[in-house]
Length: 66
Image (tube, rainbow, N blue to C red; front, side):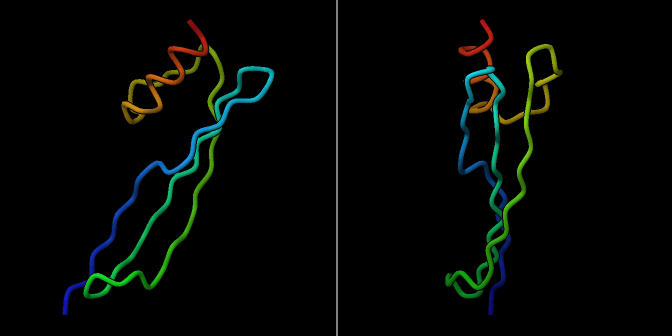
């Protein structure tokens, strides 16, 4: 019996004020079958430190904020 937990960014959106909204999913699997999924959302604004963000998020922020 194997239980695994994965957390990853599954959605990034930007609004008209160039605020970047990030949704992270945490998936728990038992023997390869998903048994639980939860979400955590947060937002980023221009000038905020994004050095600890995943590369996907950094790339989008750089493109939006210049």
